[in-house]
Image (cartoon, rainbow, N blue to C red; front, side, top):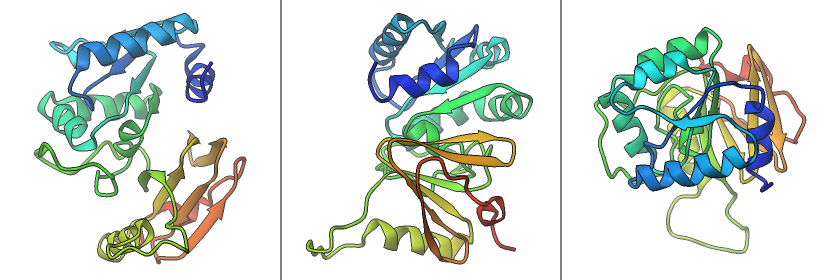
Length: 219
C-alpha cells in the first residue's frame, strides 16, 4: 500500500459503510472511481456519496472520507448541498471523519488557512468546525538560503492569527492528526507545527500529543 493508503485502511478498515466525498475536484466521477476502486482493493467498503441525496448517504454511513483538491470548490459544494449541518452533527454523534488535504482543512472552523486558489466562492467561509483549530496542509518552511519577495507560509499564518486569534496546526507532507475527544495526536511520517493563538510557534514530532489548552482560540 502507498503511504496515504496505510493510515486510511487503519482508520477505516473496521467500518462497514464508508462514503467518499469527491467535491474538491472537478472530475468527480473519475476521481471517485479511482479512489473507491483502489481502496476496495485494500478491503474497504467504500462508495461515492449520493449527490442527489447527500444527507441520506451520510446518515446511513459509519464513516466519511473527504478527498483533497481545491478547498474553495469543496466548501462551495458542501454548502450548496446543505451537507455542513448534517455532517457536523453526524461526526459529533460518532461518525468517523477522515479528511485528506482540503478534506482536512474543512474539519476546522473556516477555510481561511487553505493554500487553494479561490476558484469558486462558497456562501460562507465557515467550515465544519469539528475541531477548534485551523488546519494548514502541505506545510513547509522557506529554506534559509532562498530569498523571495513575497510572504513565507509562516508569515501568512501569523497574519491570520493576529486577525482571527485562533490557533493553527500546520501539517507537513505525510503528517496527519488522530483526534479522539480532546486528545489530538500527531501521526504519519512527518511532524506538525502548532502556531498558538498568541503567535508562538512549536514543533511536535510524530507520536506527540498537542496540548489541548493551546488549541483553543483566545478570548
